[in-house]
Length: 282
Image (tube, rainbow, N blue to C red; front, side, top):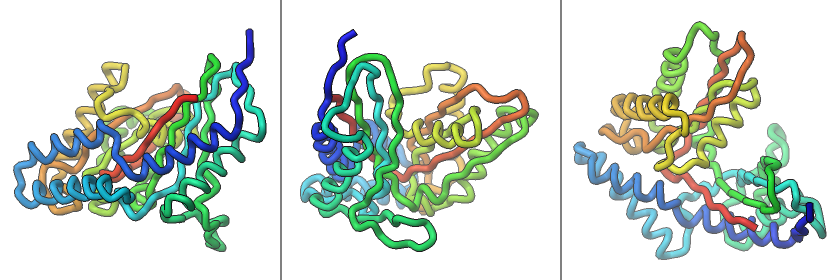
């Protein structure tokens, strides 16, 4: 089996461009979901609010400015082919350099503190929050998904009892959204992790946010649960920016994993209406 060489500099350049693209433009599926929500929204104030959010997106695109002033943590996901050999530097260093260039050169807000308690800003938004998945092949797929703190702070993880079952999962998700209220800048997008271990479950919820809103879970059981949860969340009436209405949630994505017979972990990672992600393949 031949090995394909990939220069670290190419990864740096890709990450730099993805940081900019993700912060300046919404993915098509999120853009379309916002438009559909505005068209269908019956509450006048909610409809007007959705219109303002969409106008903000258009202004950001026209003026080459970030959609949101919180340009977030640089969450970087890499699917690295096992037949790829990175040359000219370490993968993590290449990713961090790309984030540094993107945020400094693009005049994006730098929000990362080097220590959680001493709170000194690193001044270039590094380090990136890097997740690497080793996959078959000789390609490298990179996704940058900036994550703002307003929505991240409203996320939760619970270790339910197996006896709580699917109803317990539903109740936990709805309780999380009720507690969040207007804080995560709705309409929100939910990534939900079910199963795995304590740490795996949270990772599942984060990874679920990478899936397009127009792509349901491949398992019909979980696809049906995604639609049911989205409808139940919208019935809460929180509405865009908390002003009431029928549009609290644009979509729910669930990722599931095997778990211990005595466990039922569930994690909810909330994203705001600016659900940002951009990908490239090298």
